[in-house]
Amino acid sequence: MSVSKRYEEFAYVLDYLPRGKSGVGRLRYRTEPVVQLLGEKYFTLLEATTEREASLEPYERVYVGKDRRNKITHIAGRITYNDLTTSARRDIVDLLEKIIQIQEGRFIRFFNEAPALTPRMHTLELVPGIGKHYLRIILSEREKHLFEDLEDLRRRTGLPDPIKLITKRIIEELSTEQKYYIFSRVR
Image (cartoon, rainbow, N blue to C red):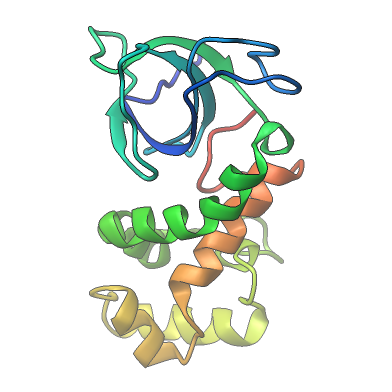
């Protein structure tokens, strides 16, 4: 069975270093402009070079796909959470929350369709803050009627801020080795 490679088409700017960088990451000691990106679909962390004249803003959505790119010249490759600049680590939470709001349908589908992993563990329990108590409530409520949006989920289950809980899970997947990856691309 072959596994097809999954690539990001779009990514968001986490940090832009117009004078290049030194130190860690895929692009050590580079003098050309460097950008650290967060993929839109698989939350892949990427490092790339840009056109010298390019102007990139924090959280800007840029094309990183295989076709002709307009601001990104070369994708150096995937990086780890530890390779992120201090600024990128500081901003990643806010950016993830913004992406989750934009892609709300994707995340509400997760809550409406997530299956059991084993007879003793459910996929929903991988989200921080969801233990057996909230799991029972979520499963009971979604049997009655699927959740319409994240606010409906919060209101009907009493679950504290689902956006923050999803964000926390994505950060865990990006920053530490996991047995299960539910939102991000497997390393």
